[in-house]
Amino acid sequence: MLVVGNGKLITRDDGMPFIEKGAVAMEGSRIVALGPDEEIRKKYSGGEYIDAKGGVIMPAFINTHEHIYSAMARGLSIRGYNPKGFLDILDGQWWTIDRKLTPEQIRYSAMDTMISCIRNGVTTIFDHHASFGNIKGSLFTIAEAAKELGVRVCLCYEVSDRDGMDKAKEAVMENAEFIRYALKDDTDMVAGMMGMHAQFTISDATMELAAANKPEEVGYHIHVAEGIEDLHDCLKKYGKRIVDRLMDWNILGEKTLLGHCIYINPHEMDLIKDTNTMVVHNPESNMGNACGCPPTMELVRRGILTGLGTDGYTHDMTESYKVANVLHKHHLCDANAAWGEVPQMLFKNNAAIANRYFKRELGVLKEGAAADVIVVEYDPPTFLDGGNINGHILFGMTGRDVVTTIGNGKVLMRDREVMVADTEKVMAECRVEAGKLWRSING
Image (cartoon, rainbow, N blue to C red):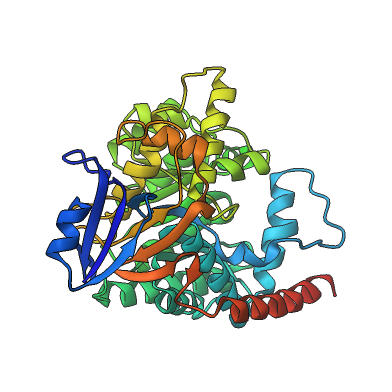
């Protein structure tokens, strides 16, 4: 039994959204009770007690679009790299990196990313992986790191023809094998999808191969219209828009997650809505790659299940929240934009997306839900309750204000000390592997 108490309890449960001095009790992987601190503490006096010291107790964060493989890019200077546009960024940086990754580098990229997620209060990750120099077994390597660190993951490998059909086939089979493995797993901590890069790097033959090898229980995770070049390619090669092509290949559906969706039109939005397909917005990535601003506010208003991710730019979901908030205000020249939509994406929609793959209810503190809880060190200068918590998070908190992270009932970090890894040793190994990667890229 584990109790976290003596904090401002934010539940994200409409039935009981806030307790001024509250506590949450967990047994195994689930929440068993919530209430006033004194009451819960007395009832479960035999268990371990974590004192929030007046901070904020709330559900752990969910990231619905990550790129673990990008971890070792930080600080990397690639000789001759001077991108003139989005395609140059892909080929000159990301595809250059993923072609060189070794199994050890994949492992330590995962370890670094997940430790950072734990430090920022993220316990559930949807990752989109690529390592075209080492495809086979790569998803299993990431899954092992996740198991070691206690992080919940939904993984896929990025199918693409960019390195030839043999690699594309190997990528499809890596997805298929991992999906079958995940479907047999009974921990509710691992899931799999059929990953795809983007339609402009995927031929009809590869589309057919992926469809033939995808178990019906899962969907696809694919980048859609991230750059205008993707749309132009689809119009030129197939005489149709991207979402229409995906519709023709039966890719859309309630288990499919579309990343970005910058260059889509109202007709495509209708297809996404009618098929109950999910979308994930990655504001920092879209801005950093100069790709443009997607019509995310319109997607949310239309009732399309739209979540918030980071695309590997950060592992701090509050940072993504802040950037999305100002991006859409600026883009729409509307100071009222994003106030309601972005927190809905982060706190409600991310959980709804995750629960299309995981059984235990996520993103909420209530009886029976997953025991994913964080404590944030935060001393508000103004009144705080369940009605204005989003404003406090937006303007007063960052991910590194998280002091304690509990995932699936296990204490992953306590008082800012990561409990599930020797972080000093892991980071030292990361630097060694990053050095090897950099040398392999630059010769």
